[in-house]
Length: 279
Image (cartoon, rainbow, N blue to C red; front, side, top):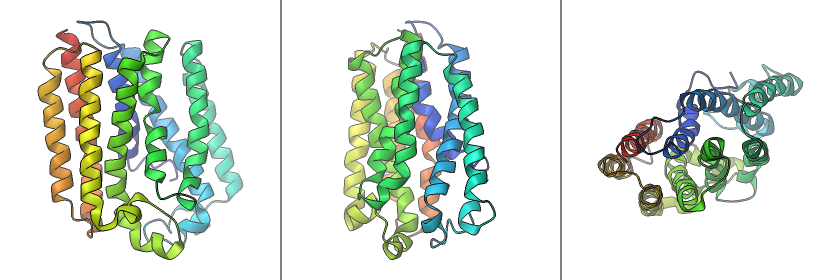
């Protein structure tokens, strides 16, 4: 299934920055807009599915040479590219239905994310930093969630939130990329796992610290109350645990640590919620 509904972790990683942003945009002492949370949750399922379809279509000549991906429908020949394009059209049409529920500013902002979604799969052919580009793409919801509630952007809150998400993506997707590093070398595609090599843990420790620092700055600028900070500290501890214990030569452990990032997103989200309710 090229929507990857059987692997919900990608949807969680796409949804959490949206949830952070919608919650931080709520008025002090109030719950976030539940309709928006539901809309963005559905949007995350659809957009992640569309991203996977684009990725599988563009990468079918690479996927059939990589052990982990050779059974994907286009790589294996189970589906034709024209069937994939038709499926993608359906996903985008449903996504448009969600986008039209938002204000005009958010519609433009949301539609502009498609440039990132469609170009991301090509990045690993040209740069050792496709994970950074994925960060720009996967955390667009940090901009869009606030815009959907407030009708504009507040750079003091949203830029650190977006930066935090990008740095977090560089942590989890570099760990993920270590699963494929031998195949990537053979096929000739690039990743931060190959760029960082034996220095990976130092690099992702720095990105993890930058993510936590940016989240702290965003929360401070948004005037979140004290409950935010203990939960952010718990999130920092979770990242530190991941980075210190991951065995980068063990595919199964890389995948376990990657999947555990849904709990980091949940800790930050809980912190923002309690910090907003208490402010």
